[in-house]
Amino acid sequence: MRILLIGYGKMGQTIERLAVAKGHEIVGALTVHDADKLASYTADQVDVAIEFTSPDAAVGNILTCFEKKIPVVVGTTGWLEHLGQVKGKCQELQGTLFYASNFSVGVNLFFHFNEYIANKMRQYPEYAVEVKEIHHVHKLDKPSGTALTIADGILKNYPEKQGWINDTSSEPDLLGIVSEREGEVVGTHIVKYTSENDTFELHHVAHTREGFASGALLAAEWLPGRQGIYGMTDLLQL
Ligand SMILES: NC(=O)C1=CN([C@@H]2O[C@H](COP(=O)(O)OP(=O)(O)OC[C@H]3O[C@@H](n4cnc5c(N)ncnc54)[C@H](OP(=O)(O)O)[C@@H]3O)[C@@H](O)[C@H]2O)C=CC1
Ligand SMILES: O=C(O)C1=N[C@H](C(=O)O)C[C@H](O)C1
Image 1: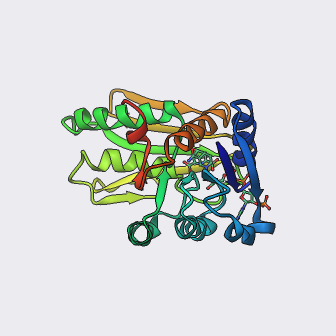
Image 2 (image 1 turned 120 degrees about the horizontal axis):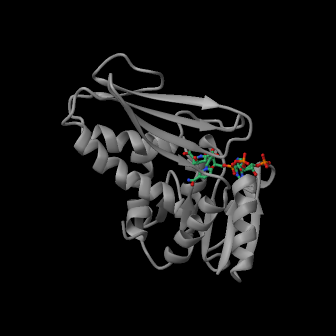
Image 3 (image 1 turned 90 degrees about the vertical axis):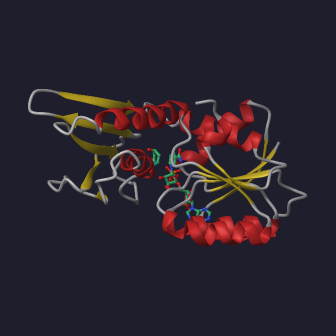
């Protein structure tokens, strides 16, 4: 497959390594310095684009891919307040988008178990629930995209909670999401249930970025030929 990498940082470079090892061709790797080159690529040259850039660049890149009819896999987080606009443009331009806040198979299993556990725990109000995410100091967005997906899975099962707050919460109607930035931590997510008597946790630690990269590559292999917006639940049997 001919892959265009939009963003050639920690994730773009990891994806390139895995893609080349699987026999794919990297037709370009764009950084902030040559971002305008994206508009010069056509669907005749690129089978799929993989976008890992920054929260303020992602939406523009997605819309350009829609205009160019290039299917795009997006891992960039921190842009979901524009999802309505992206959905509208996808329909109007017959675009193709695959978005995941986290491409790791392990984290997607975590999402599945998180919802199941939240559904059980809601019946035991003596347990308070909290989400915590820890990432490297370079990360631009908070809470992490993964923490927001985890929060959605909890809030779906706790109708008494009105939303989340990016802090510890003493309010029963708000889910607390604590964000910590520390060294070069790849990505850690914890859901913690605490009562007066005990604590239990669902805890995921990413040791490397290869889990994210291999999931993004799987999505890129699956996406061409499809139209619309997809995510990991379309790809994995969970
Ligand atoms: N969904 C998932 O599974 C995962 C998501 N992420 C998310 O992916 C994003 C990128 O992460 P990461 O690779 O670690 O970040 P890096 O900062 O290491 O890399 C970002 C890259 O994007 C480039 N860039 C920035 N703006 C543009 C633009 N407009 N056009 C083209 N390239 C651009 C940067 O260029 P330059 O090098 O010149 O600065 C850099 O090469 C983040 O939002 C992160 O949260 C990360 C890991 C997993
Ligand atoms: O910025 C990162 O590094 C990561 N971002 C994603 C997120 O915001 O959830 C996924 C992963 O945790 C690494």
